[in-house]
View 1 (cartoon, rainbow, N blue to C red):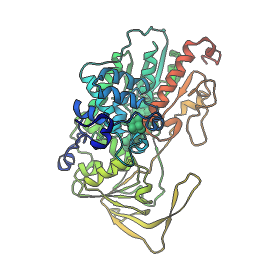
View 2: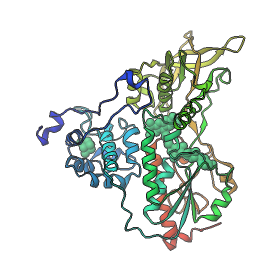
View 3: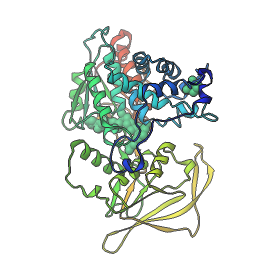
View 4: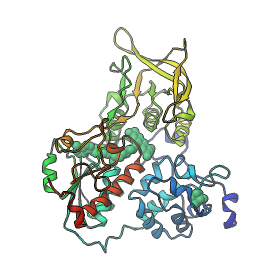
Length: 480
Ligand code: FAD
Ligand code: SF4
């Protein structure tokens, strides 16, 4: 056994063993296994318990990381799970898919010289194992307030909001157009990053806390927003950001070209329903696939294409590897699974032959110019550097913009010029210009991360508790 004081030196950082690559690429299972209790305790024991824990500051929800690491090390699993939920209503989800290399683990004091503490994998272990042993959030002391809130969107923002409302005795009714909860957790992020059993378990936990789900209900189509507003004491809007960024490439509407989320969602529905009906968009067997983009969505598309049997998968990105927005871990996983990367390639057009059949993507080579006002270096095209990347399927993964529903403006909810819901500057955090309507997640920030949506849902939920239970807040105009 390593000396506890120097465990960080004696015991190297270790992630749970991933599935061997040949197994991974032939299935849809989550690629990382879990720690066993000894491995979790040993890895948690590497933490230095820093007086000023940078990991905690860098975490968007400010998880009490060193504290639950110490509890995991001591084998006090249920206390660790309780503490993890204090700041994060979905810790087992964040443990799996947060880009820890850019957040807590990237900021860990041990990161540079000894290897960061495996914070994400331990977070996943704590909650999965606590659930397996029967731990559940304790709401036995919660007193019902008699208030009802409608939550539109069962993504991470909506689920976090519902969790906080339930913990304060407010009935949460969550509406979603999809047949399962999770939003992009279920219908965007593939199962090899996040197994859907984790979402099913979380659904059971929330239902046991008293959260009601109304699935397959599209607000504005199946149920009018006005009715929802009338029948509830307040409404939280967590509807995400779904308008694809338009690359404006000639040929992008031609044969063989698909939007990233169409592919990922179609595949998610197919796997969820166990449906084997052929979908021509998912027919990639033996094909050459080119994915355009460099974020998490692009990584999910390349790895999905590999699993759908593509013969050759290339990710073309206009900057270099160091400037890719996606998680480093996911890039490494994609590479291991056989994905090729064409960095410094600016797509110019998608080319088809005279019969309309796809030929490939015309790209030009780039170099990185000076940084812009956001600190990002622009890609400059090099003269006479064009080439064709041959493809049978092209997937566009350029990111997402907000997609505000028309019923928001109809009810006086102010929007930013780019379509994001304005949820700052009002009496309470995450309150919109309509006092009874709160909002958070991607529809307020623009496309971002699960953990930031979790943060917004948590804070909006707590603000709604104040709105509904503190009399002074009612003077901000409850009802309309
Ligand atoms: P969403 O998750 O989009 O949920 C919104 C929900 O609202 C949806 O279920 C939708 O059906 C519902 N809805 C919308 N309008 C209506 C309506 N009118 N009626 C009923 N329901 C409605 N982030 C990470 O941190 N790590 C990752 O690895 C990662 N990978 C990603 C991969 C992909 C392919 C994509 C697209 C995103 C990824 N993200 C990742 C980003 C992350 O998924 C989002 O930031 C997060 O899900 C946003 O949460 P949200 O609750 O705001 O919205
Ligand atoms: Fe532990 Fe790293 Fe956080 Fe320090 S920064 S408290 S070593 S996890």
